Structure formats: C-alpha cells, structure tokens
Image 1 (cartoon, rainbow, N blue to C red):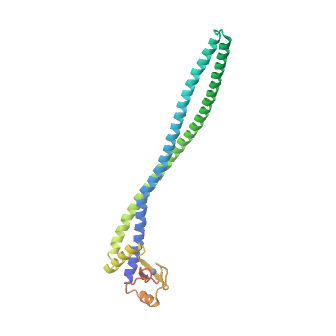
Image 2 (cartoon, rainbow, N blue to C red):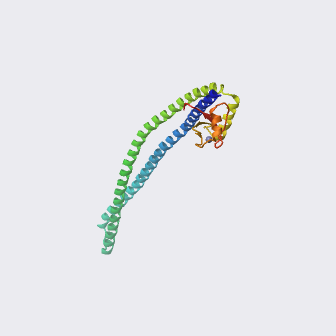
Image 3 (spheres, rainbow, N blue to C red):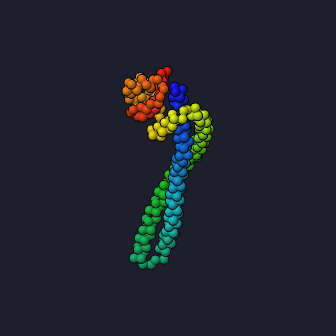
Length: 236
Ligand SMILES: [Zn+2]
C-alpha cells in the first residue's frame, strides 16, 4: 500500500506536468495571433497615414490649379487696364485686381501650410515604415520561437503521457478510480501529503485518530475537510 501511495503521488506530479504542457501548447496559437494583430495594427496605421498624405496632395494640386487660373485672370485684367477709357471703370478694375491678388496670396499661404503638413506626414510615415520593418523581423523571430517551443512541448507531452501510462498500470484499480474521481472533482491536486497532522491540500488539522491510521499507510483515507486522498510520507 505504501508503494501504491508513492506511485500515485508520482502520477499526480506527471499529471501536473501534462496539464502545464497542454496549457502551453493551446496558448501558443493565441500568442501568435496576438503578435499578428499588433503587427497588422501598425500596417493599418501606415495605410491611414498614406491615405492622409494622398488626400493632402490631391487637395494641394487643386489649390495650385486654382492659383494658376487666378494668376492668369489677374494678369489678363492688368493687360486690359490699358484699353479702359472710363476712369470709373479703371478704378473698379484696379479694385478687382487687388481683390484677386489678395485671394491669391491667401491661397499661396494655404498651399505652403499644406506642404508643411505633407512634409511632417511623410517623415512620420517613413518612421513608421522603418519601425514596421524592424518589428517584422522581431515578429518573425518571436513567431518561430513560439512555434519551436510548442513543438518541444508536444514532444515532451508525448513522452510524459507514455510514462504516465506505464506508471498508472501499476496503480491499484480502486485507488486509481478514487484518484480519477477526486481529480475530476477537485482539479489537479487529488493526492495531498499529510505532515504533522496537517493536510497539505487544505492546511487543516486532521483528527488525531485519523492521523494515526494514515501513518499506517494501509488504507485510503480522504481528508475530512478537502476530500483529497491523504498520503503520509515520513521522509518528506
Ligand atoms: Zn485536506
């Protein structure tokens, strides 16, 4: 019976390891997804910045065309000044030219400010692209590392599962059933070591009479508090 308890405690250690490996393996695709999402977010930011720049440039091209036309109109009006006979008409034409030129200067300011905005956006874009290329390398490296770890965990899991199968064969059928039931109910820790009258599953005291019985290691007893299989190990 003593050997049985020792075996069961070992099976439990293996089960904890199996569980940890399985958690790691299922987590790795999610880790990669998260990395990809971060990477794609930066790509999207770059796309938006490019759209912003394209719009700015399109708008500026329209302004430049307007300015050209307006400049031509002002020049033509100036030419026409010579042929104006009436003083009143002449004054009106001068006023009109001045208004056009004022509007043109304003448009020039708009174009200049738009150029400044484009410059800023372009350097921001260049920085983002640089960052993206650095992150792309990091992303690929990290992805490879996660995939490698997952393959290693899968290999280890296969080995550990084989080890468990061999070991569990040696465990008494009733004890095994009790272990499975307890594990189903309470999770990984189904076997609790008992030391100095205290159950290590729940850290509660065990009735002295029961503690004496457990020390004989001749029967399966469950902790009256946490219901785990109690296992006494003098050496530990
Ligand atoms: Zn307990």
